[in-house]
Image (cartoon, rainbow, N blue to C red; front, side, top):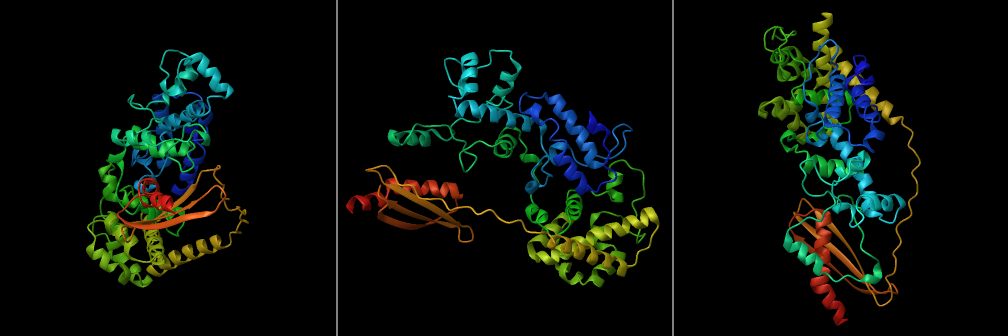
Length: 447
């Protein structure tokens, strides 16, 4: 495969991230949307891309793969890099074909498949009984890898399901149709199926998630290569001498700068006496000292800094860490003794130049979006518009509702403040329960 011939040694880790994210996933996209790729093929593609990401040479067997692909495929907010799990993504793309069959039964392709494979039922109830490759691939999206329930099936406790079916339905407003509960517009998307269903329910990955303020890390106003560098240091993937020894590399563990202590992330980027001069010269030591004294490990220090100091300061701090790593590598590979003033100046100039480049971006004209128009309900009906607002700091949420008749005339409105924490969608659902079973309908009847 062509990926095996690629080389990433001339790219930074941020450059490899773009290459890994954009190019390899586009190569098999058409095949994955039509046929279910074998697990063995998906794993082979993942191994090749993993080697490319870590800069390994698979032909000569050299290089260190610091993390497995399963860990890299975890979303960024949970400590991974957000790369794709190829077999899971293939299922998500095939599920889109299944969604078309389930949501649009009158389409020509749906009628053809129904006549051929499930003439007496619907797509979600179709069983395996044919050898046709495309059909078996599409049907694979109907269930997960363990043969459990359908991705499109109604879920919930039986009491809630029974209560839902007791709600009277007005047939004049149209027929029932299939909706996708993981998106706000009720329409299926490959992204929602992949991230919120397959990677959460089908492919168990909870044990691979790492707690921390990862979102804040990826939002830092620094170059992407610096973000990736800090991520590697926090995940234990930075090739310090002690880390290399744990991977079987024969080398000394002594810091190349101070020649006195063992080199790990904490010593190399924070505690080395040679680098401590840089921290004080840059004026950041007093900013981070309290957190340094309180932190239990390097990752704990980074998360504490992300939580307790300003965005501008944390950007300068991580940029200096990146330059300190550059200084250490210069000593190892070039035998270069870079002074603290040169080090601090490089960190300041890199961040300033990057900021200037971003400020020069020409803002694209925004497309004007017309606000949604209120549509009148049919005659003799009334329409209730409802919205919810969640106040996380106060651990409560508010509901606002307004009832109007078929001519658009105002009937009644009400607002409610409720104690507790819910997701916005759950709060709105509770609001509709309030509308139907509590005061607003009774007040309307009185009016």
